[in-house]
Length: 83
Image (cartoon, rainbow, N blue to C red; front, side, top):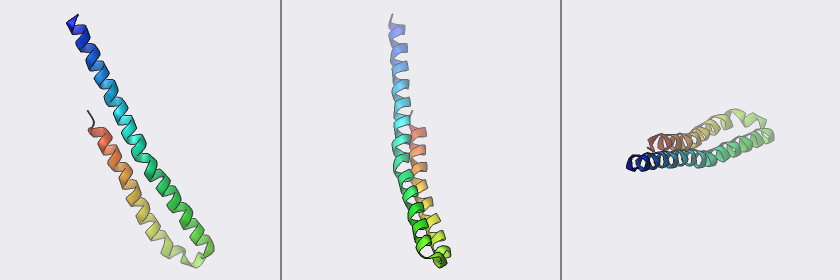
């Protein structure tokens, strides 16, 4: 009987850890996804208003998108770190 309870506790702990991993990556990706969408939309709007500035807009847009994506990667690392 004691062994059965121990197995149930281990299974429940694993389920909570899996839920924590899922929440970490889901919540950690939500903000960067919105940020990258807004970055792209604003860059396209700027290029639409001033097509000659496309070269000057592209590099900063990609740089900021990379920084936003790094936050999602941090969330992924945290999710992998949860045991």
